[in-house]
Image (cartoon, rainbow, N blue to C red; front, side, top):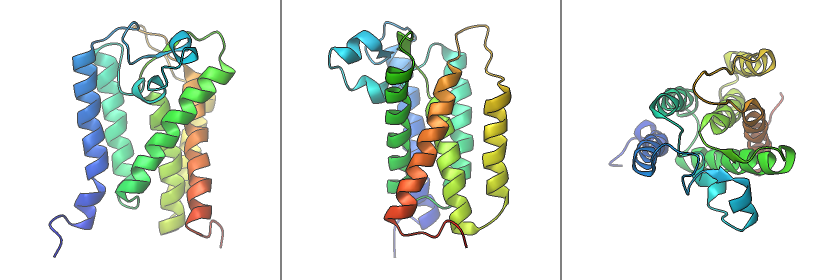
Length: 191
């Protein structure tokens, strides 16, 4: 008999990521000069860890708390169907996708920090995957709600600049992951 049930094992990766985000953010501090923040110049000099670490650090406590709430919601959406490996691969693809697309398509952007772009990847990839597993239309509505939210905006903060493009890049990266995993696992997307 397994020590950890399937449902509990599926919650391990998201719970671990939540603890890592809290720990890294609090230990690293809230500053754009943080050595973990996505910085164009540093990335151009080969500091590739920033492609992933930038999504673990935040600009202030409010930013951290908002992203942790989003991470908890993404966990609730995805944990019923994604294995730990799938969840981690979705996080990695979303992180890399957001970082590389910011680097390639936002030449004016000099630095970035936060999890919100990746959260949009978790949301899009997780909802799409859950739809092909469970075939419940609610998950198509979740995807529709995401793209309506992205289209109408609502990315406002009086404390820091919100990079709305990162949200689009995250959603795109999550769907890219979904396409890859559907082909890799030979899942039927449409009946």
